[in-house]
Amino acid sequence: MKKITRQLLIAFLVFLIFASILSFISLPAEKPANITITQLLDQIDKNQVESITVRANSLDIKLVGGAKQVLEKEPSESLSTLLKNYNVDTEKLKNIAIDVKADSGTKFWASIILPFLIPLLFILGFFWFMMRQAQGANNKAMSFGQSRAREFNPDKKLKTTFNDVAGVKEAKKELVEVVEFLKNPKKFLALGAKIPKGVLLLGAPGTGKTLLAKAVAGEANVPFFSISGSEFVEMFVGVGASRVRDLFSKAKKNSPCIVFIDELDAVGRQRGAGLGGSHDEREQTLNQILVEMDGFDPRTNVIVMAATNRPDVLDSALLRPGRFDRRVTLDMPDINDRESILKVHAANKPMAKDVTLRKIAERTPGFSGADLSNLLNEAAISAALENKKEVSEIHILDSIDKVLLGPERKSHILSTKEKEITAYHEAGHALVAHELPNTDPVRKVSIVARGSAAGFTLKLPLEDKKLHTKTEFLEELAVMLAGQIAEKITFNEVTTGAQSDLRQSTKLAKRLITEYGMSEKMGLRTFGEKEELIFLGKEIHERRDYSEKTAEDIDAEIHRLTEDAAKLAEKIIKEKKKYLDRIVTVLIEKETIESEEFESLFTRE
Image (cartoon, helix red, strand yellow):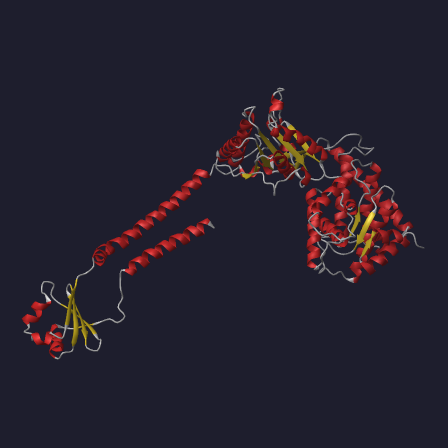
């Protein structure tokens, strides 16, 4: 916007210059005709001339009737001499008004200066424009190594506090001490306590790490510098380190304050594992961060907060005491935290009377704070598209399915046969899940296509779980394979619809054996160690710490577990075939069955 305003101002100044130049030039309404001396003498003799105005080397002649003419004379000869030389009758001149006018000084100087001034102005303007461009490029080059951190100063209207962060009670309790350090550092220094230099926020994506850092700054009422780890790194060696120095220099000038580095793993990965110049630059940037944090004056009231969901890849020098002294872990919210988070995000949305946030919290295990915010936002969008004035429960429940599985694919119309196969597939999952005692309750069964799935069976636990038993896993394997088993029993044929189920069941069986030590044959140990090639940024390599014979035994054990689970699912489906058919009939008719209606199918005879 500033650049456009500057260009408009320059254009306006150029317009004023040209307007002032043109103001010196008076354009006549009608261009006078040029005549000769002989014609003038003839007109005087016939009494046709009304007036003559002498202007330097020219005569402006006005005839009787208003016509105008111009006569160019010799520069050294006056009008009287000219008329006398041609013996003009003096009686004829008595009726002619003769006036002599000298050129004005302004016009005289303009006629001399303007031919040189206009080209000079254009040349000077061109050089001024080029120098401005060069100066702008020079400024950009000079600011290339400056920090791009965004500064947020305390604002009562926009200030974030702990009241805006629901849940994470333990994390807030840890950070209250940091707020006290920032508010009143003297009482800690008086006892010889050192102010913590760094606070590392650990947690899964969406758990509120950035929001919590802003809340600390808001509670302490201090400036907040925010920057992402990736903003330090450039292709030019030394730029990242320069930006780190500039950032910490600004922070010290604004002390007390908080410096927040988001996604610290982008720049703080382990050194010595990178390949190429870009990673040499990253390592130099990390070295500068380490130096700046270690070089803080103990009395400098600046706290560095950083967030990452990959603490396992961070360099050990970052994690030692004296750098990031505090580590605050943000867990996924439990049911009570989810209810609190939903209340915060529902505060600015008109909710219908049928909405029970506790029920929504029960339906969203494993959702992070960001997921819950997105859930209510999707529900509000759905209500707005339907021209509703309030967000109802049906909008929120539909949004849960949308967030988990994707939007409904209404254009994906199944044939009658495919619809029947899908119904039996999902009914198989639901039936086995209902009959096994250690599986989660079925909340919804649907054959409406969402995302890549032609249908789905939604199972949700009654309460949050941290530990799972071997029996739960084995029964979950049976539920996963029940869809294909139901197809095989009913149609004596299987389809490609069980592809995802087979993949997930194989992974689960392998984890039981190789990670959880739940196989009696393979014993109480783990198999395989995953190693990360850090410069590629993802886990792509698994180092085998077992023999080929052991690998064959693992494959055989995976096969045994899946076969046993399939037999269990087949036994239940054959014994409860009438309930399977009953579920399928309702599914084909209504396409979706909620938990209450699903349970009623097993109570009626």
